[in-house]
Image (cartoon, each protein chain N blue to C red):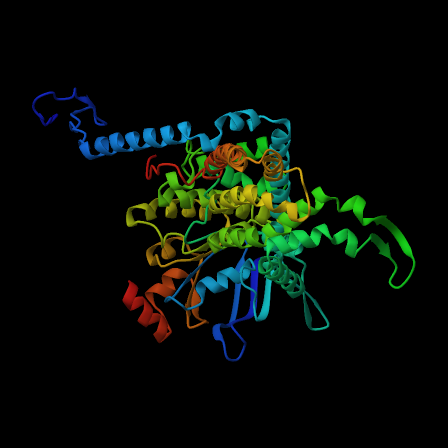
Length: 256
Length: 305
């Protein structure tokens, strides 16, 4: 069973035809338990693609399936009918997302940030959610920091709280949008370690990253994107060692 | 190996450093501010002179001031002024929150309605609006729910619903709502877009995102200008004689002043009470700001683990 299936995804910003054509027909499949990593130059559409999976962006053409269910629409006789907002919100519970800029809720402590989803969306009791939050904080190596507000935490700690917050919803797929790009270099490692642990635990994940070494280590499936197209994909070691496409080669020669 | 810098003279005792070594804190001599002391002396002298000039000036009729400060009509005026302020601000906030949500809505009809409301209530004078609310019962003697062009289903005499107090509250509240909407909107706009996205990614619905994520954060920037507006509203209640509503503080003191032909001491009475209420409101604002500043106004202790 495939966790994520993307079929012919196009994304236009602005009026289609004249606006920016950010994604130009992407097909991608992520199996259950697989880690898919997208690399590529800035503006290649990696983040946009990731955001299409949990409907932070609406696709202009194509279909997004999670666990075989079409996301965002019901399709009848070849036409797309948008789902009501409550249904979209429910579909988003399948995915957890970690952002480049953490986006923790600044008016809540670390524990409250993690509890927010389970309590408000799943209706979990506060006491249960709190236990869960403390366990998750321990899992990302932040035991004892549950009462800290985000601005009392370092960037790496904030990002680990953000990961715990996404995990608290028990998503089927985790999406990481350049999770280490906003971190000081010495804090990157601690966040990557948490992500590696997750990958080892069999979590289905899609990552967008600039950390090529990390991509090689963690990915089951590496895709290279450029100018809104999926240029090349394959097992990371092969793709990185022996890129077939000249654009991939050009990119890798700059970053490796 | 420990290293201490001897500052000489009255060195402070070494305190325990993190690695077990002794750290001698710098001895900091607070800077002197002779200019401040001079200013304090001059200002104190000026204040004394002003106080004396006020106290001995017979034109202020301090006896009359003290006699009327706790006059039953004045106290009743204070109470009504407070009621009008609180009720009008409550109406204004309720309407303003609805309007903010409407302006942010996907629905163009709601957006248009909100725009029209703000356009009208901000664009016409409050005094005119209050006169209009006072005349509402004359313009529409009966409020009723009818079938279109058909018989009345349920109805009531307007004067039972739009009483002078109600007219005053609605008039003040609706007018204020237009201003508060813009303040609230600014507060919500200042929040990073990533907050909404993070909440959406958790699967939160629009309503919950508003209530749990956006509102508490917007409060921080909304409270200071809203405190301003509340204090403004306190004094705007003195306009309700346009309705006419005749129980508020300004009307009460004016009525007494006109009776005994001594406007100054009664104006001082009114000013005293307005100032007293404003002071209480400012204390309330302080506590609110502290509550909603949580997570922001803390000293950042980055990187402690």
